Length: 164
Image (tube, rainbow, N blue to C red; front, side, top):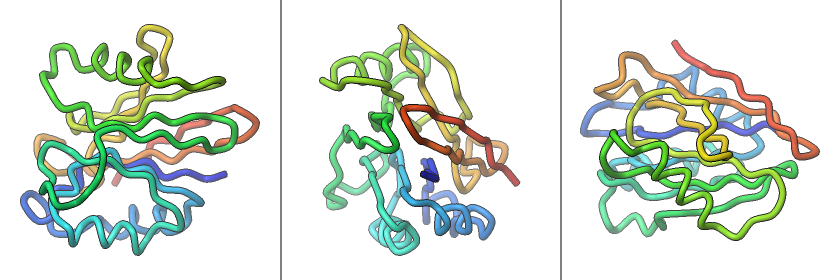
């Protein structure tokens, strides 16, 4: 299963649109995960139109009317993804996200996905693998537009960084 992992669109406050190369990866994915900060109902609608299936959470810059929760879980290819935005201080970001993941009652392989910092991350904290795809539009403070794609199957996860 092919999964596109994106976050921090910030459309229209910091960017105009998701770049065409990223849109292609989103369209080709079997499932899309967005870790918050769409920034507008139009940005959310655009991602929903591109995605075959979407799991998304709200971010600290999203209007309250988006109706997205703070944490979502989805099981794909035998791996459970716990998705949250990661809102809060940068100083305790990784530990905070790992605790959110640990608070979920899931069995088997689990991966935390969060955004907020606009910085790529693939690390393990407190025994939990954490992924941050950066900003799909390259919104400040990011230096470039980035996202992750993942091949998931039989409880295994292979992640690829995508950037332009």
